[in-house]
Length: 238
Image (cartoon, rainbow, N blue to C red):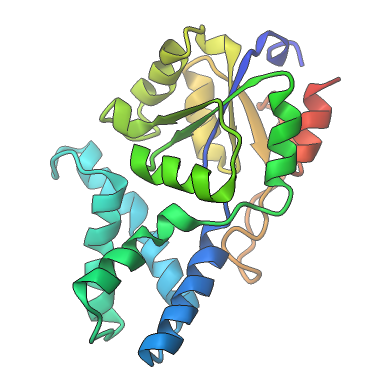
């Protein structure tokens, strides 16, 4: 790992890489459905909510929409989905609580252990499109051991805009090559690599559920390819 040997900090994509957004949302929505007596395909609902994420961010990145946080974009998508899935009868408080399910996502089973191992040697931070309140609330609830929480909201630009990756390095007082982007999404890593960051791909084959086959093949262009965070810690210790 010649490039990775200079790394002093690891910055993590969060949704899908650190936390299981799909499983978490389905579980909480099913509980809501039981309480509110709603007959909804909650797996399809969760998938549709996530599917609206990139198009909504693209509208902000293009200037079609003014700057909006992920909480605001999630609510915009949610309002559309409530109509599409014929979900009625929820109070504003219930809808607001549902929208904040993204603050309450559960980590992948080995995530906390792997992060604790990595923290012995590296500074750990988020680098997520999630807004600050979301990331802080999630970290508190899920006991994620970040040294620092960094959000695209700080730069008012969304990944994969270069300002997010370069801004994170600058905020940590490091050169881009001293920072490693860790993600389960290859497009995120390629964008980080183009900005001079080191890269680590972590496989999350079940991110989109058991029926969706994802590209989790190792990539020689990335500095590290790992099966999970514990494996990443072992590889980075070599």
